[in-house]
Image 1: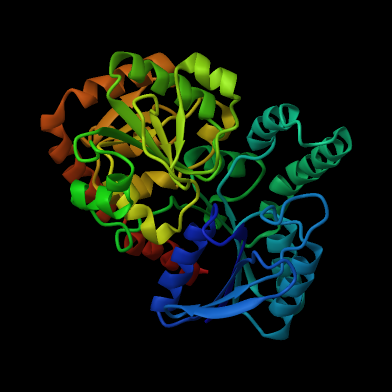
Image 2: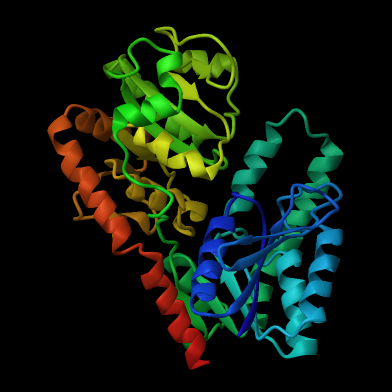
Length: 418
């Protein structure tokens, strides 16, 4: 089959990883697969191969909304042209966004392509848009006009979120909450598949802790880099940063020797609030050395190829999630990375993650509040004798339950049935 897979996300952002893994699996079965994410180059496409998958980064220029948000008029037109110039048997769009939906709809209408859509986040009806409103209100860089325009985009997208799945021939959803919601809006079970995201066990391998710390440069910024106790956290966006920082501040009060290693976006908190929490960030991308006051080591955004070393440098990995509609309606992709790294995990009892971890002896599941999350973290910090066993169990879970070959077969079987 000839298959076109699209993702509104930029390279190494959001569901880019999920879409690329599925593209790679389908290509491994001998199909001609093209994958289109958004390009950092606003107007110019870029073509190359990733394994057996042809990747075409599509233009991403947009008006007010970000280039990662799926509303690029140039990108939409380019993708529609791509979807029509060749006959694709399947067009698989990884969101309801215009750059994913419209090319698929045109291909389905004019080329009779089979249209699959992926639903991997709860956006409207109390979901992600509610979280975004909070950050926008406190973002002094945004004018009131731009906030109004962005709010209008949100209202349109909230309609698209349920409109698009009803127009597709088949739907994959990432968690139980979205599976139930798809049923609620009228999607038939025969057209629906619950498909979580797997673990990248090839690119992320368990590493020797000392080697990993040396590789990411901890030896250059600290004298006690071998002995320090490190909690790890990665995130594309910090939607639960209040929860995380509150919990970590409690850990620091009980264990002043503990530091947190962070990879991803910058935190949005003011210096005053960080000071009240007793937290101080060391910018690892800059110069200088760690001081005793620095309890957060922030490495910023790093290439995914380096993620194994950052996770391997840590003793325990953190997955704090506030109990809200958005978190119950998604699958945190980082859980696959954490498990693949073979490290103990502290996770909140929210959404589908506890269903995967409970009873597997990979760490602890905490109530979704800062006090209990901190308490579980402090407990595990004192149980060093369990770390190796928990880490080995985590890796085993990544290689079995979250094996991309197993998950890909689930999808492939349903496609062949159609």
